[in-house]
Amino acid sequence: MTSPATHFNHAISRRPAASVTGGLRAEDRGAPDLARMQAAHDAYIATLRATGAKVVVLEALEDYPDALFVEDTALCLPEGAIMMRPGADSRMGEVAQMRPTLAGLFDDLRDISGPGHIEGGDILFTGREVLVGRSARTDAEGVAELRIILEEWGHSLRELQTPEGVLHFKTDCSLLDPETVLSTKLLDNGYCFDGYRVLHLPEGEEAAANAIRFNDVVLLPDGFPKTADMLTREGYDIRPIDNTDCALLDGGMSCLSLRFNV
Ligand code: GLY
Image 1 (cartoon, rainbow, N blue to C red):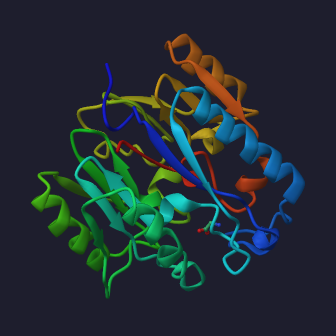
Image 2: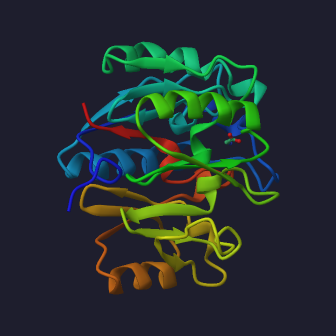
């Protein structure tokens, strides 16, 4: 069954810049290797394209080290797109860099104008509702402003809490199909995913939680064999992607694209 939460005819990504080595990170575990990151990014885009989707690849932005994590700049839904307002000062300017591309694709383009903040990584659209985790980057005011737009478009928003120390809500969960969520046990604390089937990350493989269902495949960070086996047994067609370097900046599969239908 296709759903606008899992099936897409378009995506937008942005090439990593050389400045990505200075990208934000919660813990310094070394700088990413640019060449290896670019190769992984190429594989990611090729995997999206192989499903038949059109993928727009934007130029690298040296002034914005984290700009390859395009997901944080906007929320794309069937009714239109909403430009976000990042909670990290160094990422605020990325939104204006993305806006013209989305303005060319969406008739209805809205803006979170503030004073609150909200980043796309904290938002999971499941098809039946929009889950938003408050975090160090997404605050109550940002969520409230998003809620007003979503109500106009007929979507219900459920406000949740991203666990302390976790960058984004989707750092710890992914939608595998409209009924099924992949989640860490830490995030799935008994109420987040009420009404969904939840598959828990195997112990020690929590870093594989940020995957994406994109058309008929699931892009999953490579190197998590128990998770890969679990998803394969559950009938998902997985595509492992090297996430070594994005992981050093707390990034994953969802962060690298905006996915939508136009
Ligand atoms: N490095 C991704 C972020 O902190 O937003």
